[in-house]
Length: 478
Ligand SMILES: O=C(O)CCC(=O)C(=O)O
Ligand SMILES: [Fe+2]
Image (cartoon, rainbow, N blue to C red; front, top):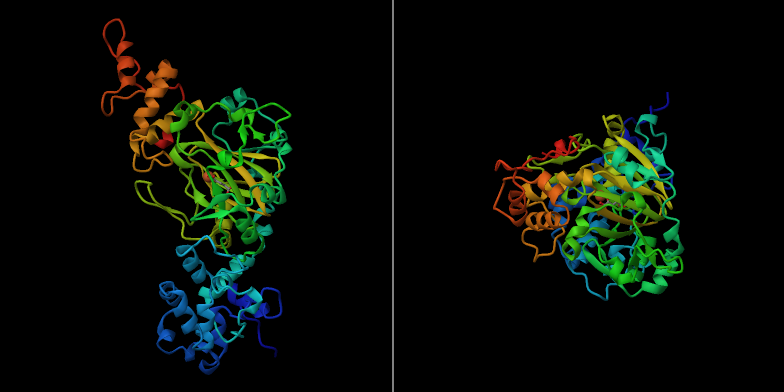
């Protein structure tokens, strides 16, 4: 009788890995495969004291090693060669020691060793069984299509051809949706990678914790095999690229403007003191953003200029599976990479109440309502612009956030010491009635409170000390 096939997730997959393209570059196999090998066939037996450390702990320990130590330890035996070649360890060192002459050579290890990838030793490690090494490789290779297709009808993000500001405020301000035709105007700008490279090749952009000239980032982006590729996420792109925001002259090519539905934005009252609010986002396939809510209870639009993005969103109070939050909501713990979340929690997420999902294609814009959780993954190399804004319907949420969670307020310049007071002052100047309707007796007396006091009723009773907007749209923020 033939031997029955192995059962079980990754281990089972490993049974067929040897003959498929999904072979770890050094031949490392998932831990479960050790069960079918004798101790003598397991390279771990030759690792000395290091062999006593559990798989994941060994990787954590090696994360403290410097470059020379990794090279030295990696030359001692096959298994330690596999562990010490783990590119994430080299990435951490490279990022900690980044200099302007860092030259990307296809992998972090090749770059730090200043060798072409092909010149690195390629030792057969098929007798090394390690989930800690195999899992990140598997995650860097999984096909995204099973996760982004067959979206249940009830989860589909609505798609609208266009939307007026009035309709947005009336019916859509609390719902994710995709606008399918709003950004033709700014497609006039040549947003190709090649054009950007020729024009801004030497200009540094913020790419997570490194600041790389655009040329260096594109070299990285086009050849990286990282499980979670570094993402270009730059808040100063308008100034760096000399773009014109809101210029409607059709002969001006380097202009873009927010889609009309989103042009009401009460944070514009903060003028040059407003917190960071617009970003250029560029990344390869599989790059993206893990679960988060947008800053300061703002809403956002995200326009895909090149490529496409898969979005999955959950309403404020429906925490996505696999995401944990501290009680005061100041810390979100989502220890999983995007691929790990898709592998482990996507199916459950899809069944969770309130979950919506969809693909935002080139030329389309997605709306993220204030307070919604979202995870985003690029399905192909993508270029996008995102902008955060405060529509009137979410004014209360933004004010409460600034007032009640000062330690979580983000993106303001350091010299803005009291974002809440500043915003209330500006709101009072521009829209005294609106400010009065959201005023509160909390905190010190401020200019806006004086204005409210000036408006006391004929009998001396204070007016305006209520949050009444005639709707309960933001009660969940409390
Ligand atoms: O990766 C993306 O495009 C999403 C960005 C995003 O969620 C954000 O800017 O808050
Ligand atoms: Fe976001």
